[in-house]
Amino acid sequence: MSGSENQADKQFGVSPPLSKAIPTEIELGLTEALQKSMQPFGVFETDAELNHRIMVLSKIDKMVKEWIISLTQKANTSPGGKVYTFGSYRLGVQTKGADIDTLCVAPRHISRKEFFDSFYKKLESCPEVKNLHAVEEAFVPVIKMTFDGIEMDMLFARLAAPTIPDDLTLTDSKILKNLDTKCVRSLNGCRVTDEILRQVPDVDSFRMTLRAVKLWAKRKGVYSNALGFLGGVSWAMLVARTCQLYPTATPAVILLKFFYIWSVWEWPGPVLLRQPEVTDLGFPEWDAKINVADRFHLMPIITPAYPQQNSTFNVSRSSRSVLLDHFKEGYDITEKIFAGKYKWEKLFEESNFFTSYRHYIVLIARAESESSFLKWQGLVESRIRVLIQSLHFSNGRV
Image 1 (cartoon, one colour):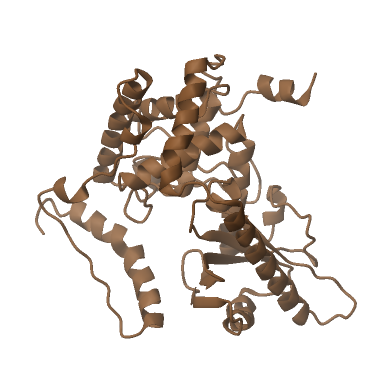
Image 2 (cartoon, one colour; image 1 turned 60 degrees about the horizontal axis):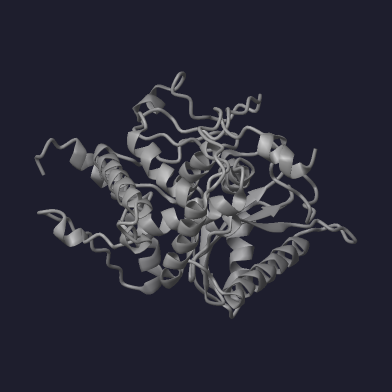
């Protein structure tokens, strides 16, 4: 039996597929039209833009290796070190001008303190690096920068190993053994992204559908984890679960099913791409049966890599209601597209946010310098969800 046949017979996800129907000519035509409708929105990068990203990643990987060697006392050793990617770039759905999420993985003799000290200084001296600032006290500590015109976030993790070879993968949960919580959190992005790709039956169909969903969510103003909606990884997992249920479907059909499934889903029932991994490593995991706080999550979408977490803990009652309304509207429009009443462009029409509500709250962040503003802006954005929660509990008394 061939590898493709094995892939076709394999069950993806926690339940059997709902359909394995062979795509029709109409569905293939709708998928081609869907792809064409997204092109004016800058959803697809050119080869030149992609090559520029690859070049930038190669440069910063080289800088990481040089930095680690400079901190290695033993001569004639190859401590290694590597820059991994995650998020939209690793998933293969980055858009024009999008940032790159990266992770610096170092051997055990390199500390987080050195990353935010000597490596930060190395970046500071690089003429291609602009808008450099560190958020060392964040839940997941990060260095933010613009490298040769590309915005980039860089996390740090050190493994309990003397060297980091270039062919090292991060998939095995055993690499988390003896690591501190910050390193585990930093590794989580790469491990989750890679696991999502392993959990979909057809990566190309997944990517095309996810591009469409991300564009739709941004046009409707619901692409934001900080504002209580869904971030990139959550949208990716919803699309991945839909792909698992319709493993042979075209992106056009998957998109139709996407809107239907998540508009009728019995929230707060959790969305899972796979059964949780059982280990003896002891890191905190999302489990509503054991953790009382997890039972209050309104729209749990659970990451597929250990330690499993809810990627949507920011979702509130109001933001869930808005999302469900948009899912229903998306399904209605997509049904009409299949019936020939609309074109795909109708789905991607921008919501007129400033005519949808009677009252608005405007947050303005100011600072005395550009460097201070970047840090202040990040802090303000991180506290928006607290403000929203306070408004929910105010019972209308503001």
